[in-house]
Amino acid sequence: MRISQIKTLCWAGNALVLAGAGYVGLHFWETLQARDQFAEVSWPEETDGPALRTRWPGEITAFRDIWKTPVNGVVPKPPETVSGPAPKADRKRDFLASHQCTTVMFVLGNPGASVAYIKVPGAESDMTMRTGEDVAGFTLIGFETSPDTGAPVLVFTHPEVEGLVRMERSAQPRPPLFDPPPFQVVTQNDLVQPRVVREGIPRRAYQDLLSDPSGLTWVVPEEETAWWGEFGEEDVFSKLVVNAVTNADGTPRGIRLMSQPGQGTPVGTGRGLNQGDIIISVNGVPVRGKEDIVAYLRGDGRRLTRYAVVVESETGLERTVVYNVERRRRRTASR
Image 1: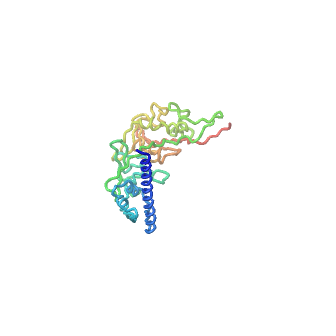
Image 2: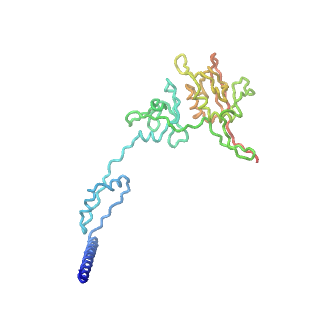
Image 3: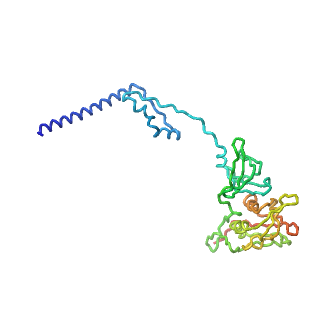
């Protein structure tokens, strides 16, 4: 190929490139001119989350109006937003999500005496409920046991909810029987956190014979109080063997101790309670099971300093054993 032919091809290529650029520029110019002749349509911003998800990526047919619009054509108006009916409130779901069952004092054979503790939103303390009482429009009608976990289940009804509503006791860890020590002990100019010894208690409960020569009044020092709060439920109440006792007419009377309370632990002497005794009440609250005692210590009986336990011996004599509990106070010591 000659040099003259190569030059001709280069000039022809340059001419084609310039012609193409001119054509594109002309169309851009015409587009700008046409835009001034029509009112510009603005698409409103979608702020609703679900609506945005339906806009993109969406189906390909949703863009038909865009790709079929000529370069100088009018932009179509955005489709009208179709608002559906407001979602219906799920009362059952909202109730179970906002309320929790923390403790159940279940009396076998006497549901009317059973008590449930419900955690209510905004309340400082748990709400106590018995059958027939309402909370947030839901009526407690009975108690069940979960076939899967064995945990207590509360059964509610609501006039606007179909079927029964079951609330299982919360699986969250429950608080100790007594409050943890809120102070630090100052010893030899060192800050030492108080600790609870499982196998031994520095100061144990003793009979207050000075104020009560009968021996029915016990003083529980703070060291033993801390032991009960840490290990009482696991080492004493969970291993305690009891039987329900009823009156002649069949009504519940109390629980009979079939084993020595605290046997094999630092509180193994029973603290005034013996095997064969019948525990009737604690501070006037009827006892129908050992779970009632634990629930009372965590509920209405929490932080009290005096517990009066009505007990009946095997011979039928009734007595009241009193426990005066020392509560921890803040201590300070000079360095």
